[in-house]
Image 1: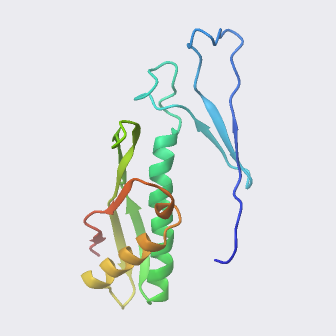
Image 2: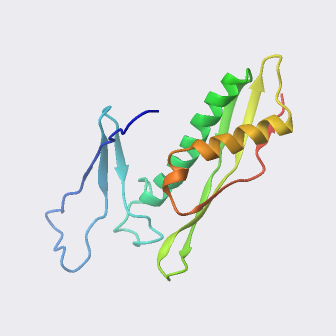
Length: 162
């Protein structure tokens, strides 16, 4: 990738007609709109702002950060596996982010653990060292991981058995 690139998201929130707002009892539900047309229902996390002011079914910023880290890592992994001649049939990651207080006492995403399970097809099968190398390179090159302070760990990268 050469040069700078801009990325855009439009975040839209609207106060409900029956919400006084200054009493701090208003819905945190909102939308994320992206240039390709995707619209995502978003909200604060119910772990941060209690129900019913949050919407549990909507994506919250903390989940989105974890998903962005996982997605970025996966996309690099898929590219590098293909370059090495390994056929990936399936990639699933049950990633988890941990919030807590940082060294300055501020609440922050402290750690994100990626737990990828990968199914390979084709005749050329990667060994454990190949998979470790692919994960290491993917982590080093992931734009999102390079942009956050939180520790990002790839834990027990598992290969699905055929």
